[in-house]
Length: 136
Image (cartoon, rainbow, N blue to C red):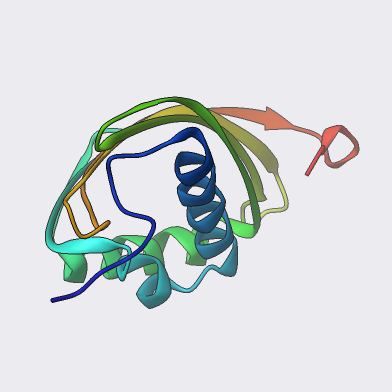
């Protein structure tokens, strides 16, 4: 059985660990590495895109990081309970034309007993910024 510690039920310490592990994985920009934190049949809503399963996660993230260049992400624990974690985040990237963006959002995560994320719901807004306005 696949496992991804820490496991629910979460404490403040283990919820913070889970958030940091997610931030580190996403900042690697390695779609396969990121996908291994999710169940094989994971369900996502990312903005208006619905994703089902690890293979879709890998395809989605591969396309994302081809367009979102020099991607850098920061996640912050917002709340947690038993097997759920809520985070707020921001990330910065630029497109192929050199326009920088800061994306803000919230994610709701639900984990199975083995520590794999089975559901991820993300609401995200992009704000065009100048390179001088970058914080990350």
